[in-house]
Length: 249
Image 1 (spheres, rainbow, N blue to C red):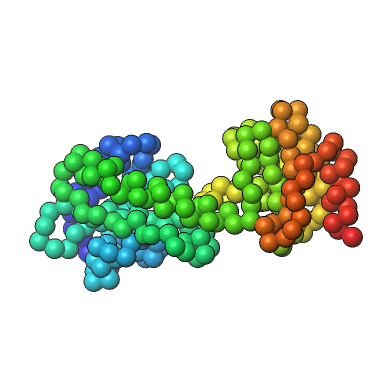
Image 2 (cartoon, rainbow, N blue to C red):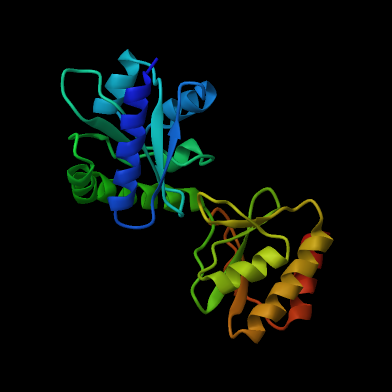
């Protein structure tokens, strides 16, 4: 179990490191009492090299998590050798399918010197760029059959389970989808509306079409990439209702 001095040292180091990294990072210290959280963090370490080897030999006794508003996270932990400093590793996003990680190289962690200011320079010049690249790849993979929207056009994609999904561009379109019952996945950024009630879907699509049209944004419906139906731009709202009615027969 880490002693008080080592706990303070790690927490202080992580706080300074978070403040020196590019972007808006915050630091959260997790003591040994947070056993379940530490186990979960160990499982999420996105590393097959230095940090993975360390955790295979020594269980995580305490740690600090650096978090960015977009969901990116780093784990800062002790070294267990004769050298000063710490280790830092990327944390894999939660709730993404395993397929999203296929063929994406792990952004393996690195060792940091005892100086957090120098450590921040090392992270910014190496690990951060690799992590951002890997994050972008897995999030893109997680989109799957959801066709990305454009600033002036929101694409709603039918999913095999009957739900609707969309990857809107901009807060305005996202707010309209949320208002009509779509729920955003915090990791992939995709908005989804369940297919249990097609009447609810019909009303949602109708309202979305009207609201976005008033904002100068068009709306389109399409099937997933596994189907052959082309993307169809929605005409005035009543036609959207008819399209949904045909689907429910």
